[in-house]
Image (cartoon, rainbow, N blue to C red; front, side):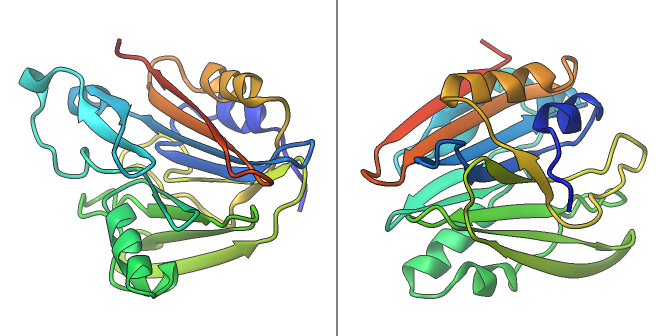
Length: 233
């Protein structure tokens, strides 16, 4: 498959929804993670990312008085367990965490879950697990061509310097919103954490972007650098 420009994949799509990028830095030294959220409704846009106490982040209402429904809005997008980093677009982060804590794998966890209960969109659940050596797994649980049936796809990738994979919830904007189609998109990973963060944030649609989390994990030492950008400040 063609390795595509991450910037182009972002700036040519006004509404990819929520997205995960996992890969390896061009110098081969770091595992690279990005997770972003977008929103069309006031409820979806009324959010920020903040650090949680399990090595990751949680979503939080920016203005509690405007929160209409926390369902599908408030969750832990990122958690860490035994050197592995779990990244998802919903509360399946905790499902994966709990299953892995009990000695199972992420696949077992996701076999108990399906797409979000937001008909007629049937928003996919997208997930990733980054291993201590930088290799990573990705998954999407989605409707069967828009029908209320769940199909599950799992992908396993060895890490390669300068390459990542981009998985997002929606193919594009619409009503209902069409689900992502195909395999995770191979994309170029370039620059340090700040330039990578700028690339993602600056190429997301200005009206719809809400928050961004990025992290570089040094594969030799395990040390981490994290960036969080919230449109709501």
